[in-house]
Length: 194
Image (cartoon, rainbow, N blue to C red; front, side, top):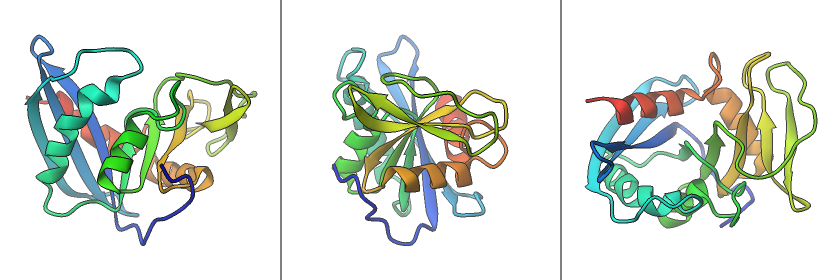
């Protein structure tokens, strides 16, 4: 995992989400690719795959990655940056979904989680763009980031080839109107659909 910027020009950003179907034995992976910086839909795919790994807290990427790799393989072109609905470095093993997927694909990646998994942060001002370091066991593992004024933060962490400050900037750019980035919102709609 590379924790410094190694991005080229970012023209496309992708959101990724996975949802179980039926009794949970099939994973439905969605990838929504948006142009950047205007955040218009450029491509979207859904892939289904039987779950080959049980649900174990902290090891979710092993359950979701196979279907996500299938979905990425179906895209017309790979995106320049992945915004994963989950953790990156802010993980008990320092290797959440965003790290795992970034390393496997070589694509720069960021973890953008809705809830805190590990770490603590100081008081967060209410204004959009405010952030505080997320610290776990004395190490900065991410940031609590306010994407909308007065709304609960998201938790941003490095996945692969993106420094934390850069990750914060991209998450803010991809979340102009809502708490969650447009990439995450688009992928979630796909993953939850029929």
